[in-house]
Amino acid sequence: MAKTKAERLAQQRLCKRRKYLEIKNDPELYALEKEKQRAKYKKTERLKQASAFPNKVSIVNVETDELSEEKSNSTEDPIGEKNSDELVSHLCCEARNTKCLLRECIACKDKVLNYKEFSNDSNLTYFKWKKITKEVLTKKGIKKKQVFTVKDPITTQPLTAIRELETLINPFLSHVNNIEVQYTTMKNLKLNLTISEAVIHVDFSENYALKYADEVQSFHFGGSRQQVALHTSVIYSHDFSIGAIRPISVCTISSCIRHDAAAIWAHLIPLIKQALEINPFITILHFLSDSPISQYRNKFMFYIISQIRNEFKCISRISWNYTEAGHGKGAPDGVGAVLKRTADRMVSYGRDIGDFDSFCEVLKENVENIIIKIVKEDSIKKKETLIPKNLKPFRGTLSVHQVLWHTFSAKLTLRKQSCFLCDIDEHCVHGKHLGFYEIIEDSNIKHNYNDSENVMMLAATARRSVLTDINFNNDLIYNL
Image (cartoon, rainbow, N blue to C red; front, side, top):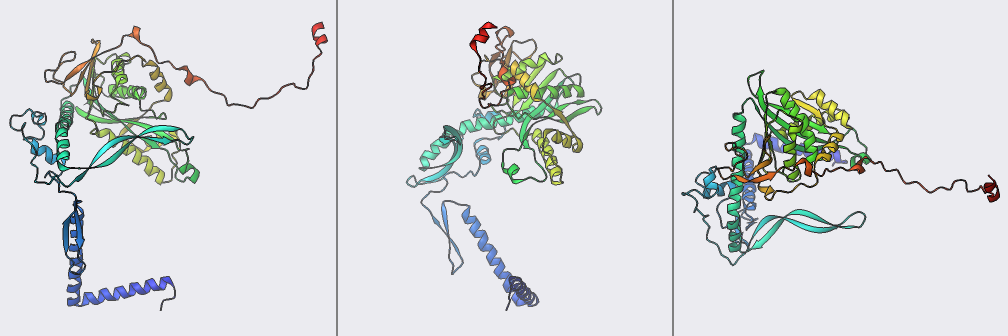
């Protein structure tokens, strides 16, 4: 009998080894064991298939080892399409045709979903993403409203759910159309660039958290960890050394982790300079980015687009193109991934990356095909002072997917989809025009000067009494 745990485990391993050796040498025992394993595998697979249907309760009979299914209180799915791609394929004769997606095609504009037979007496449950507002208490005990995004389960009758689905079909197809048009248009633009054009695809990567190879607990869980902002981009332009269009990866790095319009303006300056170094004949810039309101698609960026000419006189035309919301992944995300993975690998090798300078040094030493540029916090603050306070918003900003500017125009042309066939300052004949945005004149600008950032507040000190033990004789003072 085993006395210790190690001896017991060794004895169990020996018994198992003897058992497998006996089965291996006996054909009948081997066939029987193989049949048991096959039955066990089939049972596991049946359980997996049953768990894929939430409206059914799977019951396994222990004696017969058979799977039976019973319907729960919820009804079956009334539609046969399993995902959004199948839904689009069913409603449209061509999944990527604009007329089909906008319900203008004669052949498929009247197509509807084929619903299965269902009973409206039993309810079904579906999930919907919602934004809810809750009151939370801060550390200081102050009540504050905070917005949360939750996946809310909704239980309702099948007919009510079908009516809700029908109201969402047309907006969804329009969303799919925007995705297809933006991707297709920008792809064709990259393939047919002239010598005087360049496409700059930009995106903010998630801030990189600086780290050390070995960290104490107070640093790991405390607030001492610093972050670095990464503005990644890929420039598509003619490279005269190879005689073809070549993508160049660039990343601007800053210790200031702001992602607003002023920070974007400061990050664009070295980026445009790099593009002009690659191709000095560039006069037209096409920017491509995702479409968050807090970053690229707002009234401040509309103004910045019209002010790039002040630093680059050779630029005569600019277009800023936005991908559809939620579909902005592209080449810049790969640039950010390479930089972060390289930094993490160097930390795993034992190198400390605890400050901004060491982070830049590590990237320049170990990454060859990505150009690294540094943006200082002072340049971001200077750009912030140049953005006016009295800018007017554009009604319909959420629908804007293209902004056009040229040097002889006093207004921006805004479109709901990218179109390079129609000229600037005219209504798009393809039905993509949204409106014009007047560029504010220099005489009407109210600059955003804020001197409070340049004032250093001194630490509060205790009140002190000075020369309290000295008494003056008033007569002597008057005699003086």
